Amino acid sequence: MSASKKKRYGEAASKEVESAVHRQKKGTLRSGSGAKVTSRKQAIAIGLSEAREKGAKVPSKKSSSS
Image 1 (tube, rainbow, N blue to C red):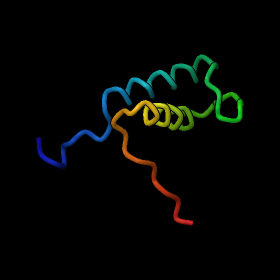
Image 2 (cartoon, rainbow, N blue to C red; image 1 turned 90 degrees about the horizontal axis):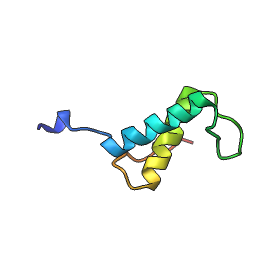
Image 3 (cartoon, rainbow, N blue to C red; image 1 turned 180 degrees about the vertical axis):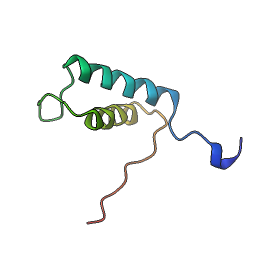
């Protein structure tokens, strides 16, 4: 497999994001502050964060420019 075709996210990360989006649709996903998550983008971010904590193959967070 060439370097340009290399997968960026691992299978475990995909499962974790899928789980977070499912919980968001069900209405049980909570943010760090305890508020209910309604945004799909936020659910994906939470799923990636959880996958990162478990050691799944996930690119590191982008740092802010400020």
